Image (cartoon, rainbow, N blue to C red; front, top):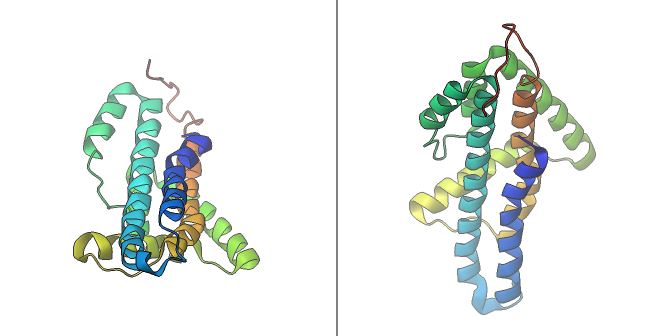
Length: 184
């Protein structure tokens, strides 16, 4: 999947946050409870955008190899619905190709080390935190984060999805069986 497509899908989070800030500024104390609820909704939206990206990455990889494989993957993974933890992502990689799993581990490890060294932030922890906020809000309405925290965490967490895409994309150019078919 093109990196620009992934980033465009995730940009909705920033657009909505800017709209919230414009209409319900954090400085206005009377907005605190509504902003807390909107922060939970923003976490849900963020994770939903990740789910969409995961589905698209898996489907694009499958279609690249064969149109019927793409149709199968599209129906099989149609309802990922929050099954996008790191363990889930590693599981998807293994299912498609153990080499993709190894590539994902390497990409993620390398990106994690760079960001931790430069910015003292663990992208895997940020990713997991967003999933927990999503779960807490979606299942119990818990107000456990702020809009600013969601945006800051998303800035780092989205790199997990970018690493997943890089891993799958690396194997779209390989031709291990002698024939490669593209969907028309």
